[in-house]
Image: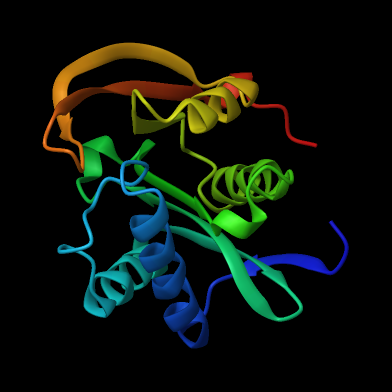
Length: 175
């Protein structure tokens, strides 16, 4: 974990974030919700813009190069503003399995609960075949609420279910 810093994403970081999306979609196409055809630099800029208004976008850097990111967005509807309904976590494949994801998620969860003190819970969906992410989210006390059948079309054309998971604020231990 030497030389790794966690900080808010800036517009200057977006090309590197886009590159991480591209790499993951090429090497691990069934771990993200979007497909390579749906990915564009405009998509990344829109996510960044949305987090500036109603969320958080944290990046992990090693030697000044982005190696991972975590973003969370509150609902755009006021009556649902007490929870985050869109969480994306991505770590460059060369840096996975090195606890960077754990630290990045922890930093991001703390940051979003501090930035929005009225939040009550975080909500996310993950692909049922994304076992690593499922275990990491359980580590943070996210609980699986339900399976959503045939939610995800995999790269081989088959369908898989998604798992809806939530983390209640009261179950997250601020360290």
